[in-house]
Length: 154
Image (cartoon, rainbow, N blue to C red; front, side, top):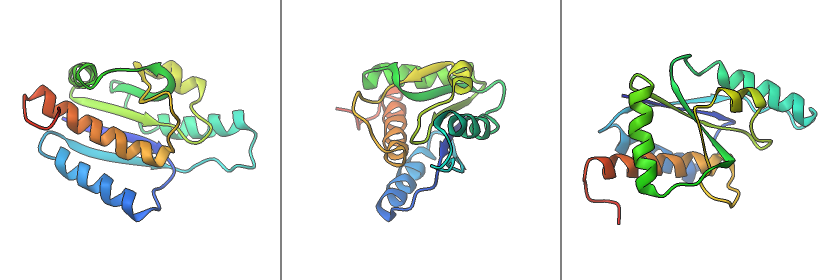
């Protein structure tokens, strides 16, 4: 199984890169993890143009048959148990490849939203897209633990 995370921008903070590395390592017991970073659109561009540019770059990293879940403030909120079911189903429907897409600071283009198989909202609160990367890796790890009946989730 392969988990691909497509995201805008690079992680610069050491504590975040260490956390992401830790959960990537933990997930290696269950699946391979591939993080695909694309360049943020410049802040000087109008928002729609920035969304379009980032969207095209991000979608170029998504295989046509992959199951795509986008992280979106307007997506569905789930419990960890519900999320675990969606992770399992996503791998099943995507031919063992699940893609999670995290947009940049402007959000997601219409093209990305139209391509998405699901839209997930981690919280009604706003997180930086860099922190979202760490949070979603931990939640995928938790999902595997739940699905395998392993101790971790309380």
